[in-house]
Amino acid sequence: MPELPEVETVVRTLRPQLMGRTIRAIWASGLPLRMRRRVDSAALRDHCLGATVRAVYRRAKYILIDLERRGRSSGTLVVHLGMTGRLRVDRARAARDKHTHVAWTLLGGDELRFVDARRFGLVLAAGHERSLSEIRQLGPDAYDALVARELDLSLTKSAAPIKSFLLDQRRIAGLGNIYACEALFRAGIHPRMPACRARGRAALLAAAIRETLEIGISNAGTSFRDFVDVNGEAGTNLDALLVYGREGEPCASCGRPIRRIVQAGRSTFFCARCQKR
Ligand SMILES: [Zn+2]
Image (tube, rainbow, N blue to C red; front, side, top):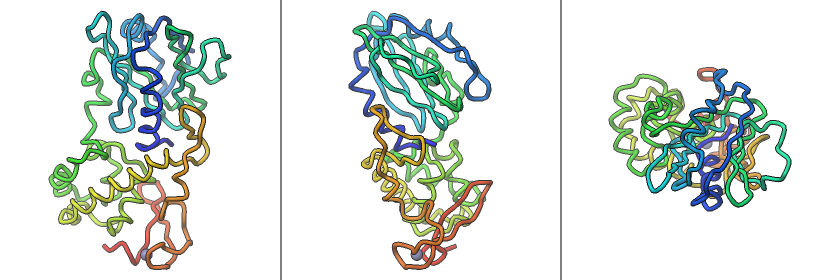
């Protein structure tokens, strides 16, 4: 599943391809995507048709594209890649992949396409990102330099295991299973430690999160089976992971075997020696 570094990689690749481009036609498959929600074609046309892209950015794992008509905002396009979603720019005359669910034809002969085999992705358009509950509910962005101060406050209010706390998008937005495991290892914090007890280490944890995400972004994301960037390139971060997916392998720091436990139905990988309760 694409996490924050993968989404950031997509945004950085799409930005120069889309900035200043005008949408002249929209097509949608009509098939339901995430939570059985169908793409609202009328809303897409309302906000996108004839509009020009003025910004491409990211909020947690959402890709946001701001649009304008005649110099005034015409809304924001919001895309979540789900598990297998891809957002890419192709030549409009090139055949569409059979899993294409939305296509925005651009002036000049290109087409922005949302392709999603498993259909857990999401495509929305609204007047403003804040009018979407999906975006409004998000906590501070995990990659934001200011997250340390907010973490300090929110850690005290939670008795949940720190690993679960980090995955709660209302607490801190953008972290998924892979980077939560990696950040906890780098911070030397046991994944089962209650969040409130990790409070004194908020700055350390925030720095570990930032470092983990930065490495992920510089490696253009972690590719397991599905993630490839806009140009179809696989990311190379898999080799840089220190604990995730490495059960039984020696810890890079102490040599003890990496352990795997299950928390809230998800695998957690950690070193029982380096990560203290
Ligand atoms: Zn260790």
